[in-house]
Structure formats: structure tokens, C-alpha cells
Length: 156
Image (cartoon, rainbow, N blue to C red; front, side, top):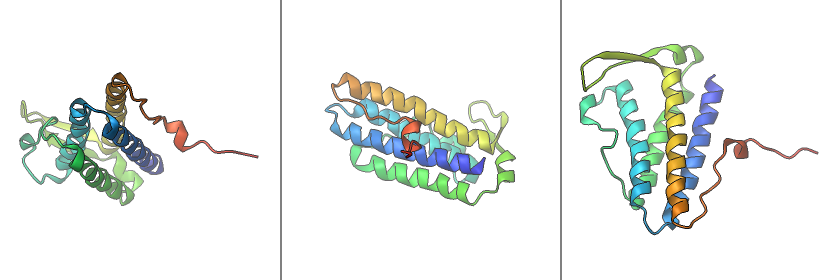
């Protein structure tokens, strides 16, 4: 499971960087950058639920808006943290629960670490599709980010 998750995170990083390249090309970047900023904020909010560096209620899913000049470095920092954490995590640790208090109602919640990792990646796929739609509406062909493109190989 660990190798699958690491491969999934690396694919997600590759695909998101391709989308960032396309965002650079569109004349109207704001809506796409808002969605991509949301991805970074989501990764960081879940990170905080593990590290407890700041009060969870201080981080918002749609908190910070990053401009084109800063968003790739924000993404790299965020995804890099997750990949490093996963590289040093054992398979048995993937089944452990992350426990946090939901800020809006104070209810304690738990999620298995592996399910959180899957959610981060599935959430990115969802928003990449929305961003690609924004790119397409502006007359630019969105990048192909299908997973299969990262694993296909020629055979003889």
C-alpha cells in the first residue's frame, strides 16, 4: 500500500505541475489560481491536523490565495512534506487513525491515515478537472494528466 500511495502522490505532483504550466498560459488566471490555492490550503490544513502546529480553526480550506509567482513554490513545499512523511512511514502506520477536533462544532473525528492520503489525491483530481475546464473555456487546450500516461511503456 505504501508504494501505491507514494506513486499516487508522485503522479499527483506531476499532474498538478502540468496544470500549473497551463495556468501560466491563460489570460484570466484568477479562478484557476483560487482552485489551485484551495488544493495547497487543503494539503496544509490536513498536515496541521497531524502536526498540530497551529489551532486548526485558524486554517481555512479557502484561506490563502496565491498568485502565479508564488503558487508553485507553495505547492512544492506542501507536496514535498507529504512525500517525505510517506517515505518514512511504515505500512502498519497507514492504518493508524488521525484524530482531530472539528472546529465548527467541537466534535472529535478520526480518519485512517491511508484514507486521508487517498482523499488528498482524489481531491486534487477533482479540482484539476475544474481547472482544466477553466483553461479550456479560455481557448487553450488543457494538458493531458491521465494517470495512464505515467505508467505506459513500449514493449518489443
